[in-house]
Length: 585
Image (cartoon, rainbow, N blue to C red; front, side):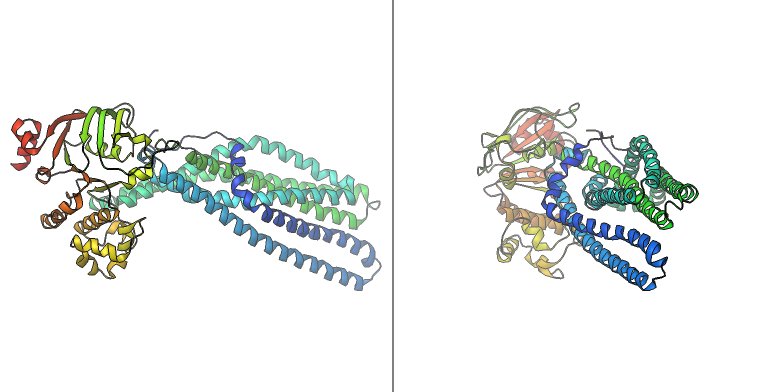
């Protein structure tokens, strides 16, 4: 999958009516509500369509006969019909609002569930801003269009049929005029549809590019400020916004073409009705009849105008759906096999002739052989880019190996249930993430554990006092990634979180590299407790922190280059010896 950033438009998708069919499960639970909406809307439309007939009768009979009392009664009756219609429309709009909110929520839930299980390489190669657009913006747009616009389209279509029936019952000759002109509009639509879809796709892409840039900029705001890059970023945003505005203008031009043509044909049909009616058909056709046909003509072109706008919005919905289903159809790659083993793990790990590449071109690991016993503490060392972090990612199965075998407790890692695997592994990185929630929530995450037990673990790690000195103790809400804490305090909380999870396999990926020596000594006092009866894998920036490991693996040239205890490797005077002495000097 190619890297997609704010400078790149996304790959174009193919139009397919099946996307609309795939939305059926989201609408099906609300079938009764939609039928109810349809029924009250039909009743409302019929009530309004009776008004021109009442006007025709009022002009041709009581008004001509100067029976003004009857005219007043008919006017009052028409007013009642309008009020009833408004009440029914209010009920319809409330129902539609409820349905579209539910549909949007269900779509977002499915997208979020998918995002939670997509492999790491999806996030490596996709702009997070564009992912956010698909997950948060498009479902709302689709729900509005399908739950509101689709109902409106159906209602307008039925309205159109009712209007035509009333028109032809009133006078068939004059009714043919707007029907002929509407046929011209249909031909125009057929020509414009693919152009409109292509333009909307481009507008969506330009909007997604802005979201991608904003996401990247906010994540790197400190770098922006440190390097005085604000003005340059502003210029980039202006260019992206100009591109978006230019793309949106094209869609507006296309939309205005249909709207303009609809209105032009509306006026032509009205003028033709009066011209033909008054010059060629009157007085055979009464003035009341001509006025009624004129009123119906307005009601005829009203739904058509709405249908043209709705058609454009429906095409927009298809572009949103294409992106949504493109995301939902992303292959999981990392997923459970059928009947995956749900077994408690002890912590034995074996790499047998393992090869791995992120892009299927550049090898990261080749013929890697590595064995770790349960409860053993091992160190991984090597130059930057040697593959140390990759080994850790493979153990957690964030990626699958390209070839060879990776065994956990003598079982192929692909045969183990993912939830059981990851429940048995805890990873602590040099910058572990803390959520914008309470300290307690960050410590327990998905676990059900009392505050009393949490405090007992924190006291054992000697950080309970630190937490209690926060504004609200364990109820203190952390800022974004714990920015209201020092880096050392964040790491101490992450260590407590691991202790609470109580994993069998512990991964420390340069976990103390951002911590001062005083804090590191505080952590070191708890490491014996933390690593007891656990398989521990340590990647350390300072080699002095791993000298007590049971075994050390030096990774070089994509495989294990040297292995042994610290003493054994120092006696060999090989690469590890050079690396250690270089740091020590």
